[in-house]
Length: 250
Ligand code: PEP
Image (cartoon, rainbow, N blue to C red; front, side, top):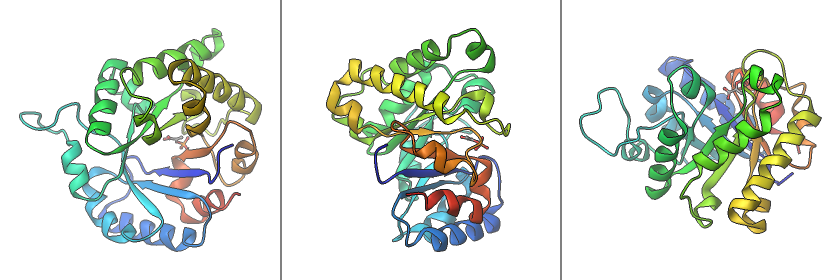
């Protein structure tokens, strides 16, 4: 594992503005003496308000998505410039819900990754296989393809601002967690893919988070694995006490 761990909360489409501000205050309080790196990703409408809460703290503001385009006639989209203007430092891209509910392709995700990096944002690139892909023995092939296509034309230098989140789709929001050994196997495999794309140094330094029903009860075992460097947490990130337990794993 790379340390400090990178512990990120993806709040998805949860929390009204007041609720998001309250949760952000609780998270800030809970992790203020924590040794790890922290991020919260509220919905677009709550970014500005949460930004005011996390400003000057050890909690980074993340967004859950961004547009492939910089500006213009793209109704309903949010640009990287807009995200930066409210204090966002990092954007989560390629989340499985974006891929599988909203049909985002690897090409589209790669365009977002490159645009975000070019505009000074850090990126968490999510990858992960569906249950039927795992059962067909294709988990590694899917993760390799999503990694290679998602990071196409990203420079080794820019990889310093990229985190990968391995999130097996069958484990997201289902209460089914990959076993630490299963997760470790894919993390090590993905690190090998990064090695072949960018070389040893980048592969060794790149953080690979695990996501998929990580919670206060299983985080320590997952994070103890050598290639699991943090967590991208959905459900458990909505409860400050649970997030706090994960946040304090050392
Ligand atoms: C996620 O949304 O990235 C996620 C991992 O969700 P959950 O922790 O709820 O499975």
